[in-house]
Image (tube, rainbow, N blue to C red):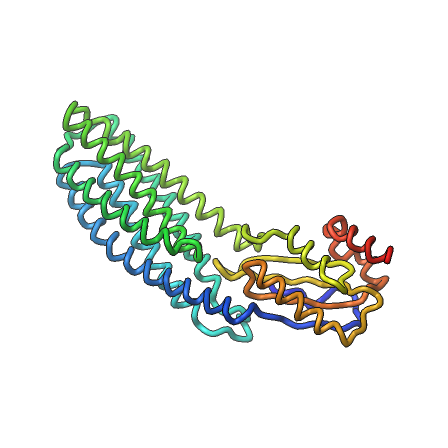
Length: 340
């Protein structure tokens, strides 16, 4: 969504321009992205090794649980590789045809990752059913050794990604994968112990079904969050009620209309609004008011791109019903100013 250029009707008042977050905040965001990049590369190496060990171990031990775990690891490796590519591609400069650059590529990669997980879950479910009908002989001890090695590696990976997962949806997705992989490995370890001590081979496809359900949950969550960004929903770390209160509590402000907040990509939130100044305010003071509001907003909320338009109240605004959903939130401030 692009910041709104104005209403459908003409305004005679001044239109303000885009304002960016303070420089120190951008430095912090860039440092977070560098940390997430390093974490993704390290996770890629660890999970690639785990995948090779898991797939070889699953084939040799005839364990669907190990193969399922390895299949999930393969989607993790592909997802992380795609995330790294998306991060690189997103650094391409913006242009006239793509004013925000390629930042949304990261979200598209996350969406593809989520759907891939659902496909893997379907395959595991079909294969598990087949093995429940005809349970194969599973070598419990080798299965247990491979699952234990995988568990240790996945816990390490989850810790690495957990420290960097707050900045990016792709890193958060990789973190959820690693965490679910660790839980899966616990289930595979438990299945291996059951097979060793009881010889009940049916536990292997049962564990696979549980892994498939966990994969479905992880994939669905990623799809939901990526879709929320793509349909330009309000970022979950942005409280519009608090933003309205902050703007309306600023001296010189009568009310706020046409308020919109959305995410360009993970960790890059944008906001646009029309701010109606009190009738007594001089046009010359609008730029000072705008700068003050931008500074307060960027220091109080995780915003990286802010566009404000300071304007005077007009009958056309009232007739057009600009920002009607904000009327209740800003009416109290308006009444206070009118009483003064």
